[in-house]
Length: 115
Image 1 (tube, rainbow, N blue to C red):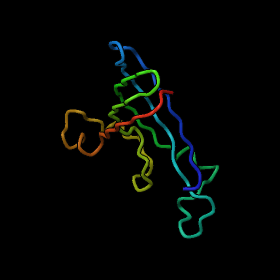
Image 2 (cartoon, helix red, strand yellow):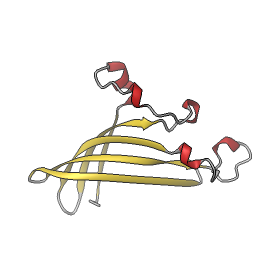
Image 3 (cartoon, rainbow, N blue to C red):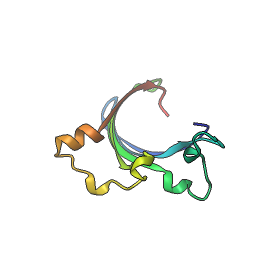
Image 4 (cartoon, rainbow, N blue to C red):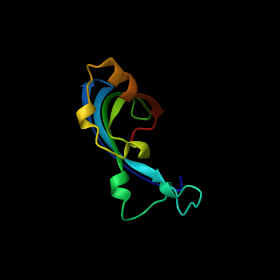
């Protein structure tokens, strides 16, 4: 994409020593700018808010002050896929269903600087 908007809110809390927990919400999307071959993906000011995806999750942080190891698990609240119409998925959330977990839970391992 040519243009991206992203937003993140994260709350970290201590568990023990270097280990911290985190709860977060992520929002955003990516658009094209004036692409004639895929006009449906073009950014339009009057509709971009309806195309913002939203996800949430929790994770663990090994915080060593100069670098951090993150392990997150997240799931969508609002679909980022145009095909599903950017609909809210709150009614479909079912963490006790193995099919829902397989289709929706996303895992992320990150190593980098603390922010």
